[in-house]
Image 1 (cartoon, rainbow, N blue to C red):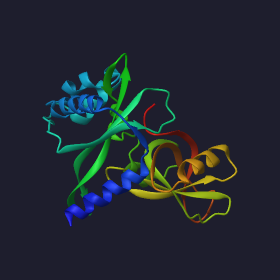
Image 2 (cartoon, rainbow, N blue to C red):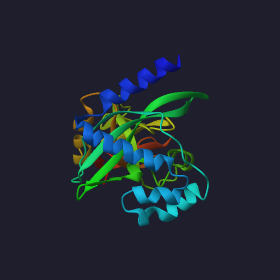
Image 3 (tube, rainbow, N blue to C red):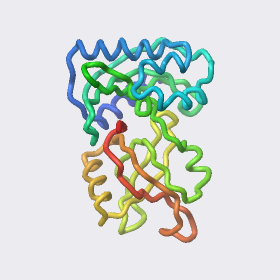
Image 4 (cartoon, one colour):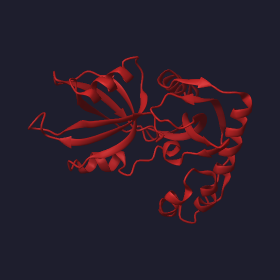
Length: 233
């Protein structure tokens, strides 16, 4: 059963992520860099391998502290250049990781992202970690109407409201899910529909908030802005 889940996850991401292939030399360089990052004992040691390290020093200290966090990756898959709205020179690498699904340990594919500047690669930590300043759990628990900008996977779904597209929202690592809505006649709504209409689930950064403007008896999630395709600024 574990093997079946792994294959399903791989196919889901395969059909939900488009990118062009890269040379074996570049793939090896990305694998070597990420392995060094993963095997670093502490968060402070990892900073040397990421882009804009000073911007994340406090976040790393809060998240990792001085704990020993190093590990050796289980394995890597394809490497390529993903579809994105960014003007940066971005690359991605598939890593096989362990995750919890319904209380069971399974292996899934996660994407690690890199930016090349002056012929040198650095890891884009926020995209690779699927980092959101407001977590999915906090967003769903508070429902406080505050706008949150979130990295997520999105797909088209049916809608309860005629003037809105229904968008399935999923957190990659925790598999937390909910449905959001965006106006059909808005520029962002049209752009998001065009991005998702090929089918499957696609990485995006969206601004969202809970509101009762659609249904006075319950709160719904409204997408207030389609920030970009992909996860790398």
